[in-house]
Length: 310
Image 1 (cartoon, helix red, strand yellow):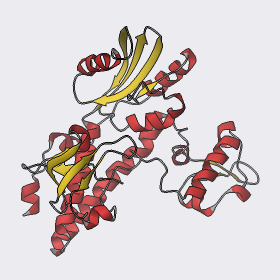
Image 2 (image 1 turned 90 degrees about the vertical axis):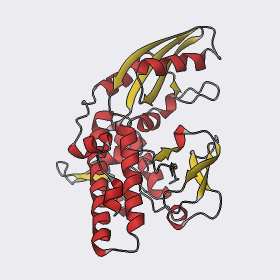
Image 3 (image 1 turned 120 degrees about the vertical axis):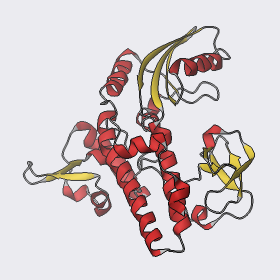
């Protein structure tokens, strides 16, 4: 978990992806300490304190979106390795899993479920358990993730209201937690997912990405980037999906074996014709995103935080 948002002079949360690297005028949303944007090639892009890191950040206590940029579901390294092995040997082949191969950690995390129709009962992968191995289709991934997103929002709202009612000393932290989480939700809800087919003079590639602007503007930027590497570039938009910014990182996780970096550009993939049909079908089977009232409120920024904080 890394701090991805800083606060500007107007009190607006700014994402790390929207600024350049180096020292910034932004402040930590928890302690108001000065921040530097760390945007290297090894660690995730994040903000670091210029002075001593405050407790919420040092202890990694701030809220993040469930199943957005980490798909290991807090499994231990041992359980994760076993889960991947079980998928290769059993799940991918649709074989039942004997109870003697199952650990309490995998069961407690909901990775496996008992199939009572087999005698004696044995285990199979749950939808949640397919996520760490990248086996869950996008339509089903949305079905798993969306309730978790809203459940966590409700939990943060209740924690803030409780702290407000008790006039608790951590009231400011609870408010910041809620604001940070809403900002993250707003970012994925306001983004459209796009999938591009790119014909170059040496072959065909594909790109996944998200944008809050018209896709045609993003396509123009992609073409400029690629003309630094190829003498000819023709781009076709194969699909766009509104309010689906939550899918981009899971796509990269699910299809990581097809990743085809072009110089420093990392969101490109190389599929054969059959694989392309499979990926496009995976994307097209997603149901259109229907916004809840809470999500509409977040997109429209109807909540007056200054009034809430009084």
